[in-house]
Image (cartoon, rainbow, N blue to C red):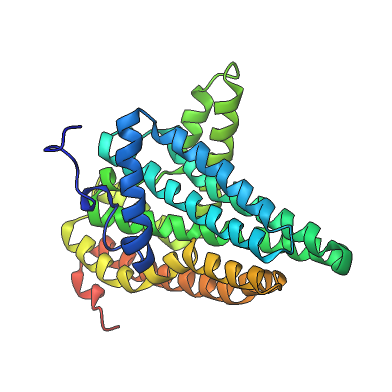
Length: 311
């Protein structure tokens, strides 16, 4: 990659619509420079993702200790891991090195980070809380995976109607099931990852029945290509809800995690996830389902009056 052909930061973003303030001004610029460096030395996006996983796990281990400075090290490591998580996707877009394995690894990356964090907090608080902290952590982990999965799904739905299929990483369980069947058990690692990703996608689809009905209309009536007038209306309705997909992802939860751990009350993070973040999840899903229910009628009748955005 010559200096003249060096891609811009803007070209490595999925879209401005789906980027949060902290990402635009902190994580994406840092990820961009990491991506340029890694490309120069021949590191692949998947290798960056794997490095991010190990750094994130190291961060979680730091939260087991009650020492402030070790906890602060954990904060630094998790921020570092997240810059790598930005860099892998940015490098993939720079060099067109996108792959199914990369998508699966990237999706699992945060799960590894936070699994190690939850385990560390459980061991840290076990002497005082006993089994109660384990129960709280398990329920929080369940809520976390659901929040992150739905945030990722709606973000990719928005990108689908904003940039088309090439600009979105949206998958469907039917295609993934066919792909899973074609993978030989001689490659058990890939078979396992595909199985996990297939079930991940099935859960996303099960939570969004009205969205699936709307997509079915687009697939059957419009041969999978949503009309431009629909895309305009969907973007306008979806855009205000993207703040919830962002808050349910990394930045808000990491701020609350860092604050609660550094102050010596890591259990507060669990309570925040279960209450505030679940409330945001419920609201986000309800609003998107309402939009899709209404817009399906407009698509079926090819009536853009149904899309009156003031209703």
